[in-house]
Length: 94
Image (cartoon, rainbow, N blue to C red; front, side, top):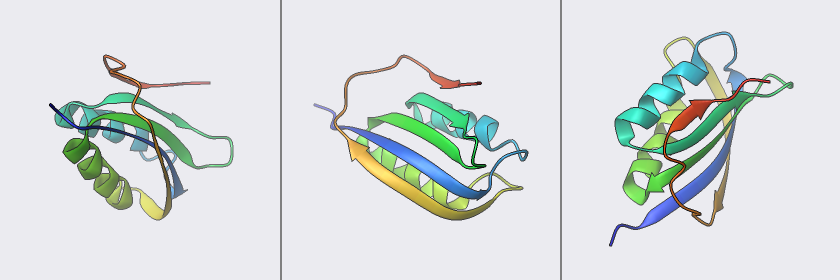
């Protein structure tokens, strides 16, 4: 049985206007994760990620590095109970 994990993440720094959401989606696809990512009005980026524990852990490491042109200053992480596969990973827009 595969151990699942779900995390709610908020990334602060220079993370908007640098394709952070697109790179997040691509990395989530590569790792086989589901969930979503979106910009927040305060300039941070928020994501909800779920999948195999080891893949989610790799995604959390990626959030600390960020996309090529981003500058990650802080990552807030809240682990939640897995609820099941979202089926895909999406960029949410307001």
